[in-house]
Image 1: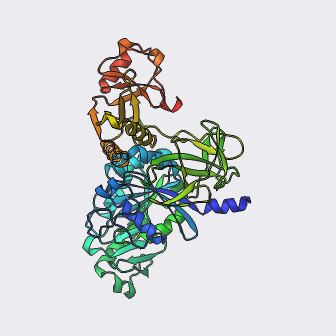
Image 2: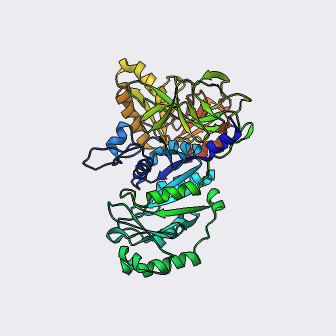
Length: 525
């Protein structure tokens, strides 16, 4: 393959995550993007609608029941000569770990903010991860067709709370029942809101109000719009594409995802403002997407996407070269060579076989238990590994067992498969081999229980533990006298020793009392 073709393929890719607090409208915005790409004929609704439709990106049964995303869906489509990879991340706060790992597989992020509520807790958490990783962020202020916060108040809140410069690309005219539309500062056009009808676009230089504009926009809002635009030009931030790419400035847009207003304008600008796949750091130095040799890393494993086939899919972000179905690769962690014969691309739960993929694309590989989250696979040439994925210590722990001892085989199989997906972490006690699950949030346990019942026909019994801190440790520095009911020694699923502490006070007391104990960084085990 010529280098020019590789560059063309890389330049046409956009891989991004959509992040938000629950109910901000993230999944609805995703649906409308799929509609734009011609992937679906009508957008499903998330919850509370009598149509009985479910959002395309919410495929797991519990998601349909609750109307929330609890796994990171992957969706791919073409739009305006671009190949789009959307990762629709869980918005629920309990699923932060899966979301954080997903953010390692993208080149940019779209932050959806509910215009009636402003910045919410989960938005702030996810935003901080994006900032930490230097991921460019575009912001979509949603629900402008409802009464909400004043635009200037939202602008100030974004800058103060998130600590990032902002640049409004579009600016709203009215809101709620009085919502007239938005003004695009780049194209110098008013997009007129017409309810369920298609938007009308009217040219406007931001100063001179003519009769054509008065026909479509209530005259009482126009002087205020001129004043706002003047204020933004004089006192607002200057636009800088370099700052956008460094994650230091967020362009933001106003609209209503449910009314499909402002989504197309936003998405068109998104393609211009975001970067194609970026280089990645590895043990062999920087890997460029235009490098000839294939490489990728596994950021997610999902069991039973098709319950009828009891399958497991490993999601791979392609980082360099060209993926071809049937190609031979090396799994860097084990140095094992293998042939990639079964590969898929996705629209949520539906999938199709993919024969080729390029940097930025997300492909699913059939997994019989070979892969782990964070694995690197490489084609020809020198074997290397990409930087480790973040690992987050759990804060909640439960002992778990099957209610029916006769189901122990199903229990073992289910627990091992679901733990490999990374939503919960597994620990064993050294003498009795009790199973302990660790999670970042309560909902992870509920989903685990639901899936064990639905996919493996096993009812579970949980016993809540009082411990809430886990620290990896060099076992040779531990003595029995150091352990009691408040400090417990367990093993993770890779046989590494872990001390579980009842609370932060016990953890600090232990450190003071036993300074010879050597604690380890879970990244370097």
